[in-house]
Image (cartoon, rainbow, N blue to C red; front, side, top):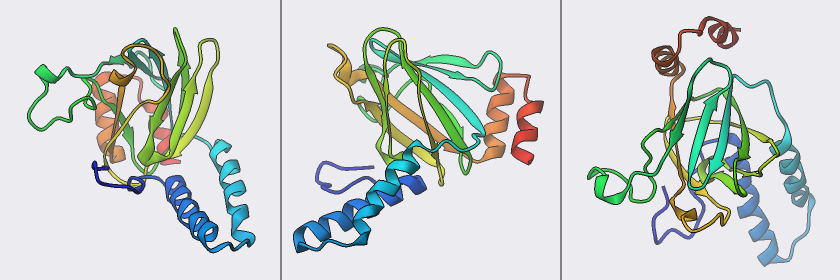
Length: 202
């Protein structure tokens, strides 16, 4: 996680973010040394990788509201919830002020994740810097992207579109867990799990 004195990018949690950091560092080295070479085309390749949708193991739908997020796990029946920021006066001593939520997104690590983002009222932007993901949520449109989490942990993000008075109070928390823990979490919330187990096995 970044600290107040950190001038660099956050540690990556996905292969795509690793490539973005590499491009950032390499481009600045070239910029300050006045070199031009074939590595500048690396950025164009990254743009194509950002839009490429592989076969996802899990699809998550995120709906931005003023001023909270709603999530739906599209592959399972009846798994949907709202995620609100925990107010400072209700925060536990180990919580992060303005970043912790009451309901975290739980996703399996080492699996391809597709996220569909939209909004119910105004334009929002679903952003998690450690994953290299930023998707605008626009009312009436459904935008999608994918990502791959390569380590367990908690990853924090926020709405990065000025969407009204409480714009800064729309945090996002992803809890990345091993696949077997994810299956236990899903099965405790849903009984229609057999089809999804076959997708992970194959």
